[in-house]
Length: 269
Image (cartoon, rainbow, N blue to C red; front, side, top):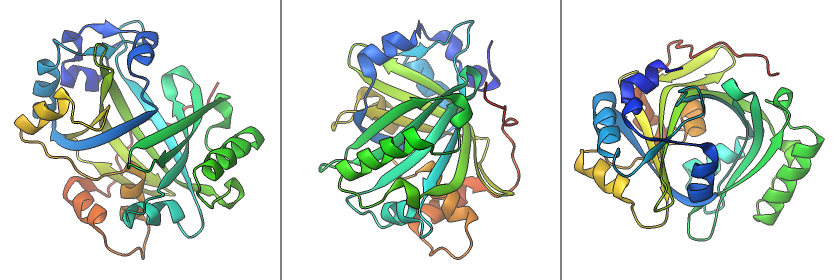
């Protein structure tokens, strides 16, 4: 089962790796993320050049991409959004994430450590719990946020936006680093939608504090790191009255606010 996104990136040319192999070598719950907005043709070239060192996550039956739905939770005052835009040291995000084809759902809390690296905490929950914070999820979120010194509780949070996209994941099994490529990216809030233009791919490298070979290759291809969070972009473009910021200015160059449906939300099994 080959998706249009997989074909556009030329993923069939890479050797596959199982989820167990990728997790064993490059789970990376504590990592440094670098993001790049890359034209699609350049992203395809990038993937081809990684074929000798990276494997593509193969989920069986030839499927090399996954459709993601992520509901982000925030306070009434948009505390998570403001902490990111203002570049506060204690930034955080809370979301439920559904891996659509697999009916797998996780509650995830992302924080920053003292050196600015991303720390991700995850809890698997039933797929029907996507988009909400039940009793187990509330306890988990409260524990992680409290342990990270963030004065926010789950009872203060409500769904704030949903992000959808298709992702391919590559891993360098020898060096324990990963690369993800996201396409058909849309941000939804009520009946409003913002979409990344179809000619670009959001590439993220996930590794240590020092740039990995994939980062150096992206630089050689003319890409430069950008500060871009999917949730922050969605709020910046879709919520009236928010102050102007660098994220919004960057997003306006690559996103539209026209409807661009990725797929119908599928009831979780």
